[in-house]
Every structure is written in structure tokens, then in C-alpha cells.
Length: 237
Image 1 (cartoon, helix red, strand yellow):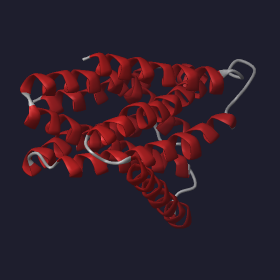
Image 2 (image 1 turned 45 degrees about the horizontal axis):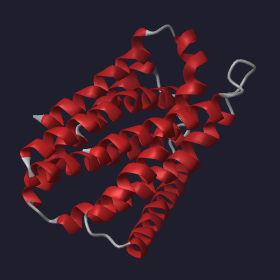
Image 3 (image 1 turned 90 degrees about the vertical axis):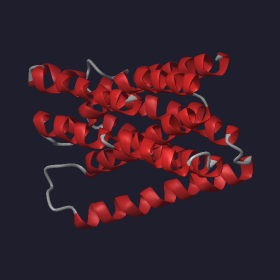
């Protein structure tokens, strides 16, 4: 139930369908930059420390992160070679893949927390839900910026969110396999960092105008600060 509630945050992406396209276009650079900051903060300030708390040593975490980055390099290479439509940018296709993977990892974290303790599971689910709200809207903006129609972006966001209950079921099935959770988090951190710095942020530079010239810096800083604050709350708990 908790994983389904978190997945339901993807409904917030309906904002891009209901809002006039001219207004969406004006906000896209800011949404993309904020999403890059949220992704970077999530990978470095949430996933990586969580992986190490599950027993993954520092040197191993670095190697697994590199593996996640290299895998997405290969995937994106294939996406760019085999892309069937030039109307949709490669970074948008990669964002769909990355969002689905991120949701699966969120589900694994939630499921693993519930296997340890019910109250911990509830707290983790609420924390994930809070950081998913702005991230979901931002991802929908990235898809629209990459060429997807708003309705299509909404549908893809809903589909990717199905990864949350899938990941939760996987974690519950594996029980207390802490090693699986830790290495899975480190791998997902590498994928997340790649998406933020290689796909999402570079796409922002192409959309800047006089009204959004500060979007990359302000959006990135805002996204990272939000994730830093969420990590502090998690640490205090």
C-alpha cells in the first residue's frame, strides 16, 4: 500500500497536461534544471549514503556507481543509434528509462525498510513520497522538452511509476538481503548521477533565453538543497 501511494505521486504530472503549452514552455528550463539538481542530490546525498549504511564499502560503492554510469553510456549509445523518431530527443528517452529504474529502486528501499520495521517503513515511504512530488513534475517537464506530447509524457510517467510496487515486491521477496539492497542503491546512484549531469542538464543550455538565463544555476542549487534537507531529516530520524 505504501509503494502504491508513492507511485500515485506520478499523477501530479497531469499538471503539464492541464497547463497551457505556452506557460509550460516558459517553465521548462527551470523544471529541467531543478530535476537535474534533484537527481544529483538524490544520487549523492540519499542513495550513496544509504548504500553504505547497508554494508557496501566505499571502494566497492565507487566501482558499482561507475558500473551504473557505464551501463547508461552503452544504453544511450544504442538509443541514439536505433532511434526511430527524430521528433523525440535521446535525453527524453533516457529519462523515461532512468525514471523507471529510479522508481524500482524506491520500491526496493521501501520494501527493505518494512522488512526491518513497520514504523521505519512508514517513515521511509513518507520521505520518498515527499521527494517524489517535485521530481515527478520535473520529469514530466523534461519529457515535454524532449519532444513528447504532454498527454504522452503523463502516460509514460504513470507507466514508469509502476516500478515502485514492483521494487517493493522484489525487496519483500528477498527478505533481509541487505547486500542486494545496498549494491542496488549504489548502482542506481550511478545511473541517477549520469542522467543529471550528462542528459538533463546539458539539455537545459539549449533552451535558455533572457528570462531563464539563471535557470541552470538556480534550478540545480534548489534541487540539491531540497535533497540535502530531506537527507538531514532522514539522518535525524
